Length: 112
Image (cartoon, rainbow, N blue to C red; front, side):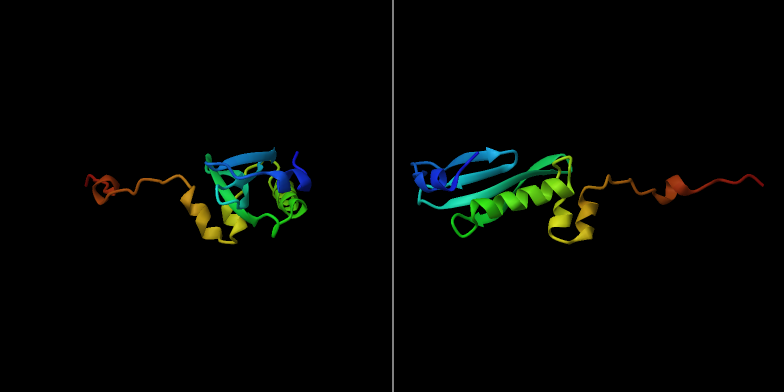
């Protein structure tokens, strides 16, 4: 688990790198020195990443609060991005697609 002091001591490297706080929360350290919070989650079986902001504007405690809030609302650790962005129509992106029935398939021949 990270501490505020450990985060302040993180130095930029030639390439960006991530430091995990445990579970889904991590801090991305960029070569220019930016320290960016990232929260991993799954949606429709795919891993996605949510940006929470930069350190120190978003504190370690605030980032952990967001992670805990999402864990409380989604105990299976699958954060529903439709919930995060308050857009219920995005759920249709994950719904299985049912093939449309063509007119030829739907036509019934009746014997008279």
